[in-house]
Image (cartoon, rainbow, N blue to C red; front, side):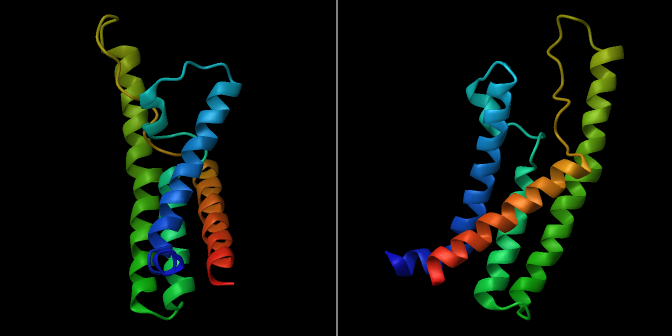
Amino acid sequence: MRNIIIDFYPLISSLSAMLFSQIIKLIAMVAAGKNIKVSTFTRSGGMPSSHSALITAITLSVGLKEGFNSSFFFLSIVLSLVVIYDARGIRYTVGKHAKLLNTNILEEETQKLNEHVGHTMPEIIAGIAVGAFIAIAMYNLTFF
């Protein structure tokens, strides 16, 4: 069993970081008194960014396991930049467009567009922190 955890450490770490981020969002919504549906657990946007947590955990896990001078780590860095840029830039702008459409264009009876698909910089930073924490904690539990 330990060998499986070691072999799949980057995958387990990254999925754990994403799951942990989604649980944090769920707890925050319950604390705020918002309605919770099954789809709430998989929705985009919010604090912290689960995309940033996932990609940070993958990158840090690969660096810790394979070495910070490995091609795998460099590839992970590039993918991290793409994912985080997408979350902050493109998907954040899509959310602003959805809000504009919901407010000014769509009729009341029309299903509203999701306005919470992107992330603010604090949400991304929190996601990076969650991903780093999970990756380092799992590394220490697994390899020591």
